Length: 304
Ligand code: CP
Image (cartoon, rainbow, N blue to C red; front, side, top):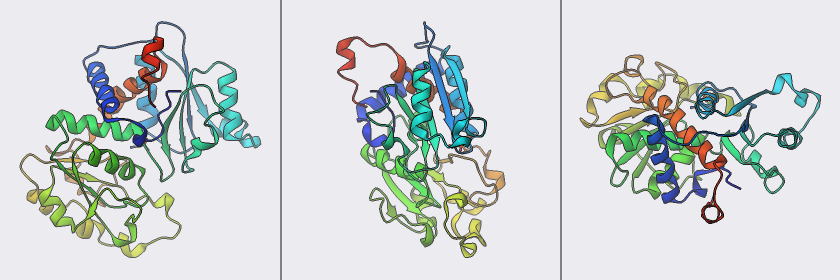
């Protein structure tokens, strides 16, 4: 089953193939649905970018889009995630895109659902399509990942983007640095080295900022929030310390003036809105992988 759940399920060659397909879609080329295929978008958590870029991607691929709202469905009557997805499968959905607040929500579905599941973000767990669009943005800029230094700044512990990106960037040959408040350190993520914010900024080819994920904090750390920009964020002074060719990325939503100075969000180095545009192309490529009919020989090579 060509699910896409976590980046560590994808081989490097599969990642590069998805990025190549995404680059084709950026040029207006590539596979489109020739028969009626239904795709259901199930968002149990708020989303702007992922939700709407999936919907745009689906419409560009001529897919039939089923948008699900938990608060307009039988979830309010106690229906479980499994029963909701099983129902969509029964009524003809050909794949499901799911965002859910629970880490690894997909484990309860695996082996029981016979249509592809595309993870659009699970709690503090993983966000593979964000990771792929970040990779596409970096590749467009630098051509490859080998030898790059990418620093990830902020709330590392609660970030599914940091978890997905650190593993795959290390695997593709980049050096990953982490920087941020000690309260948000992730001791379980072995793929980055913690350094001081200034050291990270000076050495990076890519400075990747994260929002403080307040909604996932069990207790509020008001100490951390005071003077956050000056202590941990990208100020105008720090931007001047960046390498000449270095770029700024952020998965967004951005808290302007907290993790990044407001004036830097749309500065020349910023690729934040480029990332969003790339999200459409990458999601088209991921949907193609999930839905395109394959010959028997091609099917045997699908590893995720
Ligand atoms: N980056 C990202 O996942 O944004 P949304 O939460 O708006 O989808």
